[in-house]
Length: 97
Image 1: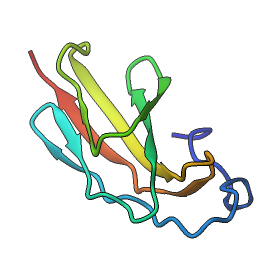
Image 2: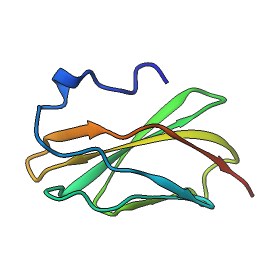
Image 3: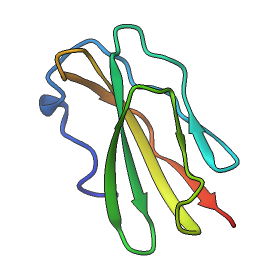
């Protein structure tokens, strides 16, 4: 998963804690982070090593409609000015038909 995590000095040093994502079938969910206006979800498909960055205001990401396979996901909160907080731990998800 090299290249997905930003070094600590590139997180704009704001006090937004890392979300704690959890998987639920073909979904990833996390509790809201105080002070967050939105979230940046990093989704890497293991087989192709292609990473998508998805911006959302929701506290979940739905993998329905994504290609079957293994994914690694991490999430970071952002404030209303676009400053980002700490990156979550990376979790895995297997998307099935």
